Image (cartoon, rainbow, N blue to C red; front, side, top):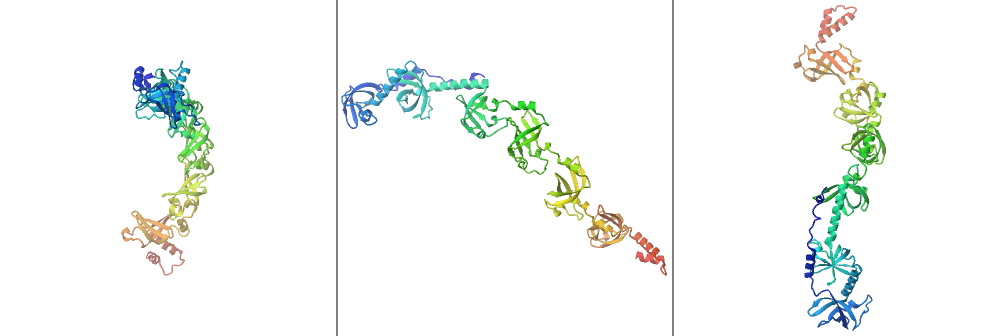
Length: 557
């Protein structure tokens, strides 16, 4: 990185110092700030008149020659050093206190004459004059020319504490000239050199946290301030800085970027630490079992800590084989240590996914060990849908379809509510898709089975027409028992001759108790009557006067 990349703000041009200094002196009154010896002419309650060799005596406040207890330090006729600070009309303006300050200044100059120029001082801006500012420290006044002050145009420096460097002592005027600009440029140069070093060398350096925000921390590294973004604090990912650090903490950081346009330095804490992902690449692979600690719980899953600045994610779907799990907190708690299986290790994107349920016995496998098709089991209704109900049997759920719930065609939402216990038969187990079909009807006698106990195939029965369909006619025979006459079995009756609610006579053609179905036939009705008549004739021991024709005639009426 070239030095120029740090910006040209450090290359401010200095005006010629002598020009600046002379310009400052031009703005000063040549009659001001001159030390003279005077004689006290008179002292009253308010003023002191002093002969300083002018036509009119100088005047100063009597308070200037009193000690802290209010006692006079001088009397009439005493010789006294005063500072000529100007004139008011023809009367000289004099000050004893300023003379004392001037004496202290001379003593300061004498004491530091070997290293005076270049000495750094810290003082307070006490007032402003035509050429610049007066800076005081320890009752010693220094002159800061406006051109060397480096204050902003809108800045009000009065009472401001400043650092400056002594650049010249003018013995004739007694002025100690200082420059604030010199200090500022030195600091800029130091900052420039420090920036160059920490950005190019990328070494671990110490920094002090100055301010903490939600998005990161401002850290001072040897006088240069940089930002540690919250994503650069931990390898776990973005964290809340205030939950880990406080202002004043000293931390290890590395410079990761410097924006020469915005002059912003970016720092990183995690880059100053060993990269745990390099170690994990050698230690883990998918399928491994690892112990982790639950660090945070969200509705969609759990964040887990591996204990080495790496955070993994445990999705809610990988917490339990329980399909109706509502929240991860139903299974784990923050701080809990659990064993998990690594199911994804993405080193490039630094993502780790783990599973808890894969280390647990699979509920369906346990179900297969203890159950088979045909078994009768008791379960609890967990969900009711339009097509049926889900019944929990142990740790798995089976489906009770509407058509398998009742012989009377009632749906599950009419028969049950969530939480009801129900006894069912296992009718089908699909191990590949892990689906179980259930039936409640199988545990109940079908209405047709009860009907079959009283009727047989070939019996002639009467019923009421329930409905007429394209393929045939449904006939109500008994409570909960219907029969179907298909169109081909209606002859000689025609469909258009029938109406719902009317009676019809037919022969039982078939009875299916398992499927709860009965087939009827009008077509067989005449043959069945003939058969019945023949059976009646044969059963008579003596026909008597009756003939076979008479019997058949009566049977067919």
